[in-house]
Image (cartoon, rainbow, N blue to C red):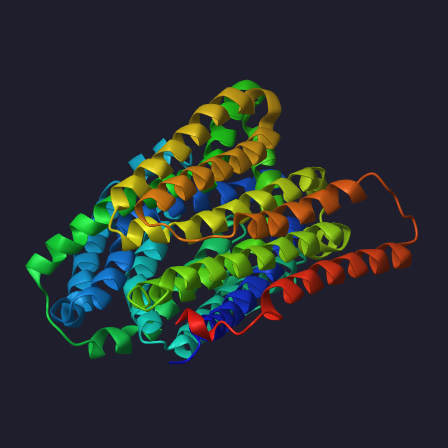
Length: 498
């Protein structure tokens, strides 16, 4: 049998290529958005996408993971898993959209955008298309059709980016300067403002849905009510697990606006949200890798559960993962002065750069937590995974409510790190009890703590010559990456892990 590590690495590389290309295309939008919109306006984007993240979890209600579980568990369930799950999502999404259209103004009032009920409709449609695309995309992953998966993602994101450029870089400046034409007059309305970001996203999501229609129509099997009940029972705790995870990841944006508006006014609050959201983008390089890894790893973990020495394979994967994210932490922090010009060209946002290393480390622990999460998914202890995430959500909510009025977005950054570290530690010890995996904690700690120590040490020195500075930083990065290579890839073959 082929080396499973190489197989996972290959799949991660393909998913990673699409994710990286997609994120890089989206990264092109961040400089555009922050250059055109001031922090208060960009705060609208940050906040509304936080709400969307919550709803996406609720509307998919864990069926993506349940699909993988029952695809690989019983042959009789495997043939009906996709059709059953997709039919359920189609029904629930249709109900959601009907309710949104009926109560759009009341929802707009509740989220404090009473004059922009159209935002509610646009995001509802974005969510609807994304939810209906989730299981077909999972099906492509389960069939190892990573190239088709990547192509659809890149096309969808490419459409989103192109429309952003069209509306904000072509229509807006020409309209503002009076240099209009029939096309601009037909499609551009200056009062929409940041709404064009949402419209571009909507059309990108719709394009993904269209491209996946053949996958939906070609799927075999039938709807199985008994299987759906079983899948929902497995997935139910995962909904709370994912929902708590979204609270940990995004709820601070919502609380920043709500808490700071009451004490310092709407304009100041939205400015803080905008600064926090823009600088969070600089921590996304690690998130890109984590997302690509998860796309490949989830079906891999389920499909290799019964392989000989599978737990040793999982342990080795964790080591390599830790080494990669440690190197990425160094990459971003050592060249932060360069990244800020590329990603956030508007100096109004630079005061928030101090949160970037904190959020990078927070996302590292989040990635480790996702890795550790195989224990409750494979041992079917999903309720325990739910409890861990709920505990993290309680930390996030309570500490943000307590500390945001005093420390503003700095509190949110440190609380994010504390939360992810806490749930990672808890998950590790519970996992060792219910599904023990022989992780090499010392090796993992080296990959995580060494970059932090290097970063902190370099903060004590100042090198004015940029050529000398970045040459020295590059040398440090190469030495660290070299140590990973010597420890992990210059070792004996891992073929015996099969």
